[in-house]
Every structure is written in structure tokens, then in C-alpha cells.
Image 1 (spheres, rainbow, N blue to C red):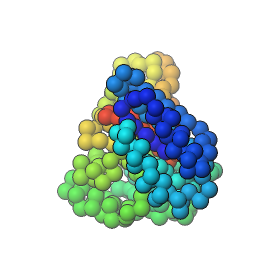
Image 2: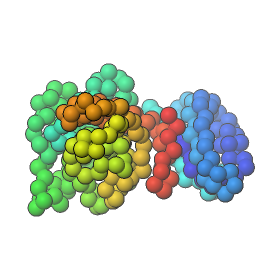
Image 3: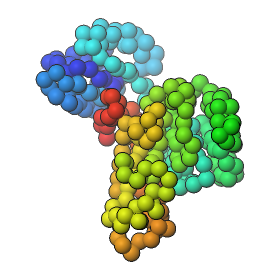
Image 4: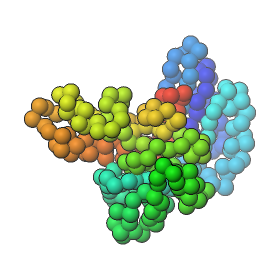
Length: 278
């Protein structure tokens, strides 16, 4: 159960009592208050309840009274239903390969429904995992038609879209279909070095740290709520190819963490920030 609401006394008690009254056993509970005096309150509760799938509609109906009392935005996720992912990729494969490896190893508890690419390069590799691969070319003149085709192949049962170095800007119309459900990896420690050739920019500036940022996609380019970031130390001895090599490792790890936290329902979005119970 994930909850966002204005902070007030009694929220934890009300949620705990509700779950107890319905026979649930709380496994883990995390909460965070932005400001106890008039700020926002966030809560994530893992609980065990036999036959949850069949009882979920009744629980949701019963909880509405508690939610109304505290002005909550909330939902209950049944972890027995694995989230279904669509991965978008262009030519660079390192982030895609990391996700496929973690999925194959059982470390990513989700289903990869399909891979969509504007290039055919990784078709054979992806299909070797038994995952459908859709090559949909994108040009400035065909972008609208390409996005329409992408939505068609995705269908209605995809929970989250992963941009694993997909080098195309997503339109506002597309974003609206998947608000806070499109995760991008940005090859820079935002907000520095935005735009093209970030590693060349970093090299020219003689930086000592490079990094990567995973964030939700919004209409503001590379400006959505940040989920995870990491950095690596570099020196004057590292040329642009070496910076890219180090950067690729950081990108893979950061994106994989963000995807894992999303599919495990560990992220709450408030305005342009995230609360991540990791």
C-alpha cells in the first residue's frame, strides 16, 4: 500500500488498524514526513493477507473512508501480479543488456513484454530471450505515425516503459498515456552537461566526477522527477573513450536500480520530486 497525504496525527494508527481489522499482517512499514507542521506525509506498507487477489476490491472499497478522512492519494498493489515492462532502445545496448541479464537471473521481478527500437541492430539478440522485438523507424517526418504504431504494439497491459538509451524525444501526447510510468536514463549527472556529447563536454571541462541520472519523463526535457543518481571518479588521464566506458557502467547500474524500485512499488512522486523507500 502506497499513501500520500497532508501530515496529521493518527495516520499510521488508522492504516495499521484498518489492516488489522481485515486480518492482514504488516511485514514492513516505512513513512516520511516532509514537514510535520502542514507538510506532506508518505507511507509504504508491505502486508500479508491470504487470498488478497479476491479480497482486494472489498478492501479498496472499505479503505475509501480512511482515505477520505486524511485526504489520501493511495493504491494497493498485489505483488503476486508481476509488472509488465516495455523497453525502448536505439543503438547503444549496455542498459538493455543489463536489464535482460537481471531479468534472466531473476533479480528483476517483472515481465518484459517487448522491446521497441528505431533501429534493427538488436533484433536477433533480444529474440534469443524469447522477447518480441519491434523495429519502428522514426524520422522527423514520421514521428507522429511512429508513436501511434508504438502505442499499438504496446497495447493496454504495459505498466512501465523503460528508455534504455532510446535517443528520441517523447511527445507530450505519448507521455500523457504513461504519466510517471516512463523511466529514462540520462548520461549525465543532471543538471550538468545536458544535450549532445556530454562526455566530450565533461572532458573539455576537466571534470573529476561523471555520473548518470534515472528520472521519470515529463514534458520538460530531462527535467522529470529524479529517481536515482550515481557518480564515478575520473582524472586528467581519462580520455573521452574511457569516460564513456566508465559512464556506461554507471548508467547500467543507475537505470537498473530505478526500474527495480519502480516495479517493487517503492517510489512516490510529489510534484517534481520522488520519495524512494529503498
